[in-house]
Image (cartoon, rainbow, N blue to C red; front, side):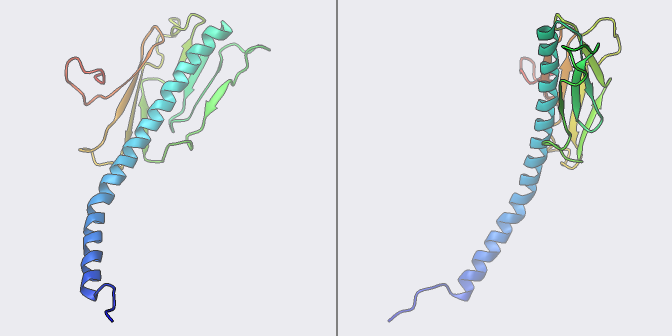
Length: 170
């Protein structure tokens, strides 16, 4: 009767191969996870801006979007009334973000008019948000940028894309 199983040499070779594959896969997985966090924060901020614009049109009132330095945001009415509260919606930085995410802006607030445009009476308003993750190696990092036009439209783009005609270009 023959015994079936693995020899010690086969087991050691298998473990060595698994360790080698793991050493290659773990850094790539960490970069992918870091870039995913960048995308999550960028989408959250963009959605918050779009929600503020939609609320301004729906409520026929000026809605203020405020972005904190840690990627959390809130939106509420510029002039508080019974039908228009100071806090309509908010997003905590703990939702989908990490301490490694860096958000830089030209300003922290944007006010949308009842027409859905940025309020022209506030010249120094939020128009650009850059999101990056400093933990990801710079050669593998996919930093993103949100541009807010005067008409109230938002665009999520990649500042590293330079090809003419590419929709990801800023």
